[in-house]
Image (cartoon, rainbow, N blue to C red):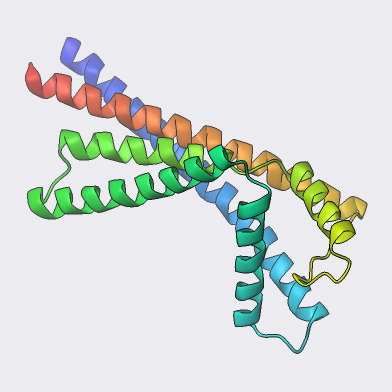
Length: 194
């Protein structure tokens, strides 16, 4: 009877993990849609520019924001978290290639990656802080070398709130998926030890 209960619990944890994966996928798709709308607005406003120009523009805005908006602690945590994700993914791939299966340590790394992703999502400043920062940039730099445009329309503010809520939901989903994966790996480890 105990084995049957463990099996049902195991299946329940897997189903809940899959549900949260699907939710995370849809949330990320919503963010991607908003990002692509922003790109289309930029390209229609500047018809002489290409997608490569847009990517350079976004990179320069992100770099300027990272340098001037983030605190030194946030910058360091951002770099450490990004490096931790890359190192964990590298180790995870190496473990999978070496063992050709999911081991307990690779499952722990997989859960850790989701925790790091959740932390990575929560690190950037809130959207209202970003808007204030860019408004201050426009006041301090009237020449506007970075071609910053701020849209204060009601529709844009709704999108900003939507992005903020979506980021928060993505962070929560990442932490839940990470916890479920760690919990699942603990169950598998305990089942293999008994």
